[in-house]
Amino acid sequence: MGTVVSIDVRNADPAAAEAAVDAAFDLLRQADARFSPFRPDSELSRLDRGELADDELSDDMREVLGIAERARADSDGVFDIHTPDGRLDTNGVVKGWAAQRAADRLAAAGLTDFCLNAGGDIVARGGPEPGRPWQIAVRHPADPMAVIATLEVRDGAVATSGTYERGAHVWDGRTGSRDLPLVAATVVAPDLTLADVLATTVLAMGEDGPAWAMAHGATAVLAVPPA
Amino acid sequence: MSTTPWRGTLIFVGGVAAIAATAVTRFAGADSSATTGLGTLGSGTTSSNGTHTGGSSSANGSSSSTGSSGTASNPASAAQSGSTGGTVTVVGSTVQTPYGPLQLSVTFNGSKIQDVQALQYPSWHGQSVRINQYAIPQLTQEAVAANSSNINGISGATFTSEAYVQSLQAAIDSHK
Image (cartoon, rainbow over all chains, first blue to last red; front, top):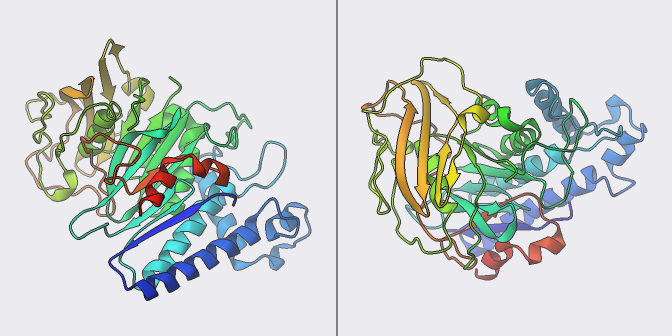
């Protein structure tokens, strides 16, 4: 996925934590191999080239496509994994989905206190120390070393979509436009699969986005219009 | 210590605690160091006017309830921010709670909260309410620095491996 994943584990046996983290990274690598648009032999690339029939798709691909389709329907087409130039781009779903699945693996291994950050999208469980929630800051759109808000999260996910880091990688599925009404959108939700999809949608939806996201499962939304 | 303030408009939805957090920290980085709670809907308390050290603020029951609308208002029309000099007003869009619509306006002067108004207030004032059981965002009135040991993670638009090196997350990771 071309990004960096950080996992901060607290309050755990070191050997157990290391094994769980290894398993979580294995899942992330699997997802990257399957959904990478940069690998010609990835399942996504083959699907995009029309080389796979519906019954040849993996369960993971079906799950991701299902999430994308629900998001498209829920957003009246704003969220769409079909790019304006006719390609298939599942990045809007896969990163949050894969990171949430990795976090679920950590939890299944018995870890109760961890913070997983996949390239700016975060799953938090428990806290860094007893009685204290994780402190999650939201990056300043114009300054990678500054933040504009801090959120305390105990069990939840925080996803941010923005135009400032990787350029115009998000589009409005209704119009195909990559000229978006917001600079950044941050969504807090119970899980990262949801938070990531909502954040991407809010970014493209603009002023109607925050209320829409709150009606679709967000706990909080922070939208940054152009200054 | 980063000192880049945010000077634009922010649209914030998510209840008392959440909007407070944004408002304060948008000017953080310079000098604010006080820590406080600004009313935590998730803690079982009903207060939305907790103490803080910056200024006078209360979103109390005396605020008028203007709303009976059952639908969330347009955040854009709701989120008119006035910015003159150092004073900024952030108006949250209406949040639908199971108890009615909630909309707050928070005015900042520098890093200090000057005023908090409840533009729409649900009928649950005085009751014990828990808005969300999963994630309760809160505002912390702390300066946020690049090497702050208080910050555990940074949420931002996806960075590349190259950009990570220059990111605040990298600074945090390197301090573990």
